[in-house]
Amino acid sequence: MDGNTNWRSGKRHCSVRFQWLLFVIMAVGCKATTFRDGDYIHSSRKAQFHQARTNWQDLLGQHCPRFGIDRLVAVPIPKPQLPFGKGDTYKLQFSFDGDRHLTPWLPLLGEGAPEVPLVRVTLRRSGEELLGASAEVVDAPPEYKARHPVLAAEMRNVSHWPKHVLVHYSFDTRNEVDLDRGLYLLFPAGLLAVLALCVSALRGVQPKLAQFLADVTSEGTTAAAAMWKGSDGKGE
Ligand SMILES: *[C@@H]1O[C@H](CO)[C@@H](O)[C@H](O)[C@H]1NC(C)=O
Image (cartoon, protein in one colour):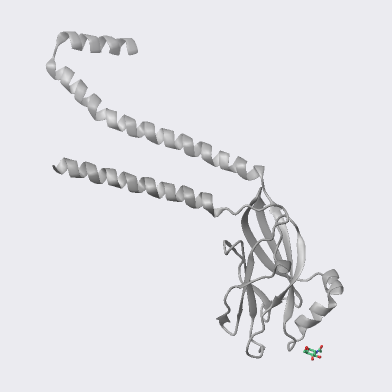
């Protein structure tokens, strides 16, 4: 009776594990959105000023990155409700592909912000998948300032809203490299698993072997003892 319930709970435990594994496989499988070159990547932005943060706001298509295409856009940034003080900082965060990839908070105005900010967003892709996003704020190079004088003036003018921030999207393509790395990781992992299996199998066998040897010696049959000795001698 007791053994039966034990067996049952063991079986249930196993099926829960199996479901969990299935869930993980499905989660990994569902996670990836596939893109074709030129597809718009759904993007949102969130602003922080006066110690408060706005909600996520979707970007218009013309301000979104397009898969596999490096482009420069001018993204309008929301106006703070209160006048912008000296000690205030204005930060922006971007999210891509339905909030799957977030950038850090990027200072655009105030402390830590350059005179005319340029946000460099690097999107990592592999085949049809977007793997991740990273971003940094730099002072716009002189040729950018010369080419976009209105935007630069807007940025410097405290009372002018809405301002536009220059955002440069670039794609970092990594294809075969990742596959190779995956294989390199998988191979030792597989070897380790096999080794672990062998060790655990040996452990299971060991007590049985000891029992068998104990049985043989306790019986004291001369034939068995001779056979054992014989094989031992051959081994040496
Ligand atoms: C700053 O922006 C305001 C509002 O757009 C404008 O009236 C003002 O002339 C601008 N100041 C400068 C120095 O450009």
